[in-house]
Image (cartoon, rainbow, N blue to C red; front, side, top):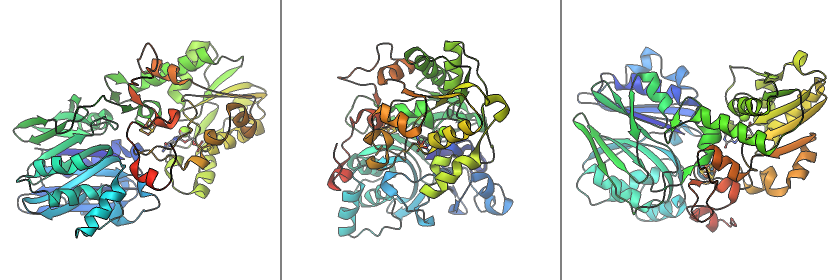
Length: 465
Ligand code: 5GP
Ligand code: SF4
Ligand code: MG
């Protein structure tokens, strides 16, 4: 998901809408905005679909007045599967002692089932099926005397991955979980401030990047300035390495590193580790593009756009059903036949999850008369589900969970299939010595099976680590 908030600007909702539009790649199912105005109070709008289709019309935007606002773009993840009702669309708003608050959450709460059960037993009335709603109820029950303190109380009970943007009538609040699994950055916007999942959304509103919110940090922002707290027990940070590979936009800066350059490095590492003789390096667009450029630069094999992407389709993976995903590949990608015929082609993609994309693409490219097809993948085999806010399917559906690399190659029917090593990936994101197995610098659970936060609810449901 993507989250964004601003305070201290005229017509906050317009900025929030623009910010969410720049974060649309993080979630396309639905979006919502909550604002507060001293006359009109809290107002919200939550809609299915794209930001540009919902939050551009005057009719909607004029119902969202005020100098402070937050927003969310949603894509449903492991914890909240199949629950695409409007009541699950964030931000969530609640009124309780000390006034109202709204929250937008990116990540996944790994003990949400047990928290929900406990809260319901104690009388909480849930409006949604979302894990994120627990935070509002925990805040409502806290005995603390102001909302930021209530939020600290609430978040100390929550486990898992969370970047949160929240607001009261006058305060904008940003928090990252102790491991800092999901991103969150601070920007200066005129006389006010902005919080955003990624820097690309600061760029679109003309905000200046100030800094990242630190893992375990809570910032409370008013028109007067930024206050910083550290409510959690300190821990070694474990940022999601897959943000670098796939999830974030290439024009964002993560941990001081350009995502684009990191992806190009990944492609270079991939070429060093897994060379092959061929005529062309082609990306599976858009997610494989920077890595393909890196592969081409390193190997000296010419880069070419062998697959053309229809720019009017969203991210296929994000559509939640198998059938739509299957169609989606063809609706979105087409082979550039004239270029491919008779050629030995290296195809670079960011990841193989279920294998749907790669299998379809292989068919299309052989159909177009390619002489050989070699897949090179910019991440290690995805063999484990993510429980921290990225929508990987159940373990059984992951190709790499049930097959060896050679079996995957045969299953996909390609001439070769190679993945970057975990060490190679760490080198590409700036860890010169590779992955330190005793203290990895990132979360890489979907590749390594080492979960930095115990997925409590999933273990209760019988998941075996
Ligand atoms: P597959 O088709 O193998 O199931 O999925 C791989 C494709 O989906 C890749 O082209 C990649 O760009 C995209 N993808 C991989 N992992 C994720 C993910 O966790 N979330 C989303 N939204 N897309 C993904
Ligand atoms: Fe990121 Fe993978 Fe960890 Fe999920 S399991 S947070 S996708 S690295
Ligand atoms: Mg892709």
